[in-house]
Image (cartoon, rainbow, N blue to C red):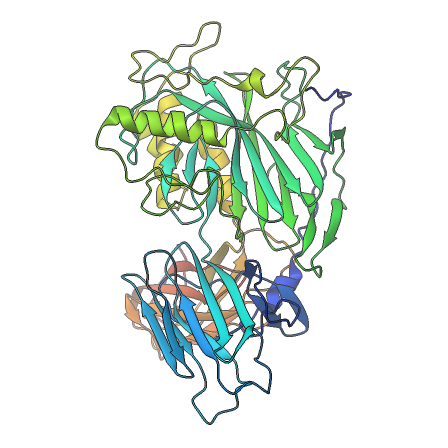
Length: 576
């Protein structure tokens, strides 16, 4: 089935990304309820009650750290109930732990969850609370409260926990799943990347010809030819959004085309509101806006999920290629999704597992590029993309790509990208911080010879929500040996999005040694530290920003500077 489309070009204008409300996301526990009724409830995000604002949010916590503020579980039992049983199930493979009005502890190798219920004669209306440690990645657990004397009083709730790992795909499709597993997926066609309650994201992957066969993937051990992301489509509530090259099929370096419900759409400075209602239960809709850096788009979902698409034009291939990043979501199905139990790959659409990684490379190839790829391919019925008349998802599908054990990655009638030395690629990717993304960047640039992959990754890195930069300066330019000097660390967002100044503390170090206690940032994101007097010579001052609490808007960063103190009365100050 084709969707007939009129053609025109889109002109984008920069707009600020307004997420100021997130600055109020401070951790206070609250009741997550289902209409205050004792009944089975669907999976829900933890509801965080914030000062001056209420917003549904994922319960985020840095991996492995303790949760200081307990989360109340289930509605309060009726006052007439004499006793209740609490059950906590921390996931498949871990036994449920059941006690009556006491403390319950469930633990596995990576996680400790504690359920505390009131002891008799404490009022039964008191709520049980969760506390403990959250592992890296995505975790789901179920809490149940029952009345042993009244079967009708039964509340079961499922809670979604998700630490703030980057999920998405970039370059020659390198994917990081929502639970932090990193793998390569070079299939060609259109796939469901991520799917959840109010969200679905689909990606189009296109083969790229290269003059050499790339090396093996570190995760799968398979050496295959490569592909790139060339288009993205998304469901936002009841709306369908596509962001793709000119659907005529003619190379068009002027820009990608944005469509909403099939209609070619211009994105102005005000953005596009798609029935955005963060107060709905569950939150619905979202908003499309121009990225703060680069030429991409961002979709902010009402539930707090964020999709960022960053494009670049590849002149040598006459193609657009994309990085696709998803942040702060509890969606867990798709090629970016959560691994199934005991599986080396994300779960299939029916939730089933492909099992442990096969020992045979051939079986790995069959599972990854056969069973797994085919399971997540979109169909004409499920596709969110827009197509020119006479075309469909089949037009972009190449089920034979990538071929097994290739001896050549040449594609007839297509130009072949020529590789460059690893050293050249490493220099091009020097600014990339994330370990996986840096390795992927080096691979992409080396295999294709295109330094644009490094530039695109830099933009993607800048657009990561909460990324900060910390700078260090002294309170004056010139000072003498022994004089007290105040160093000022300033923490600011890498990309201004209207969220206010970062909150938290700065830890100072002088010449590699701890310097005083942590200093709290002021309302402008600044923290001072005063030395007791510096000797003549060069000194290194390091400032390390530590964000406030868990679930905050900003991420940690370091800043450093070198100062020269002279012994004369007219000593100078020099920064490096």
